[in-house]
Amino acid sequence: MTEYAIKLLSLGHIEAKKGMPTIGSVTFEKVATFSDLKGQSIRCISGYLWLTVENDREDHVIHLGDTFQVPSAGKVIVGGKGRYAIEPSSQLARAI
Image (cartoon, rainbow, N blue to C red; front, side, top):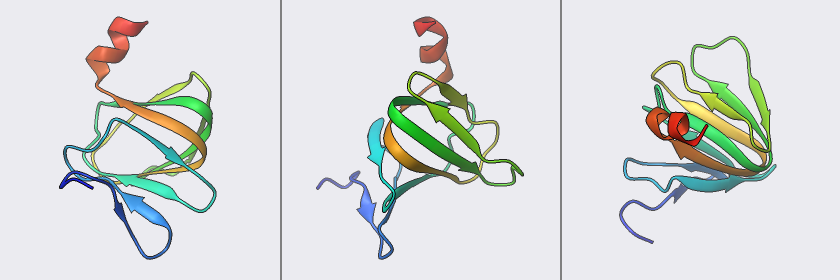
């Protein structure tokens, strides 16, 4: 693993650091936690994702091909069963 690799935590939960990979996966036993994604988009590239954003009263579920733009700074927890890609907003606009 590199210095930028995802770190496994004790509860089967992963946390991404700066320089993190832009593609990852989650399962029922393993979630991904991000910080500082404001303005970036999370795209579901397989399965489905359950997104919890710090200070947001609602959780968000996205399915294959859907994206969610992170509205604020703070932690974002990605759960569910699928693969995700983190994309800068400008990249998403060009892809559409």
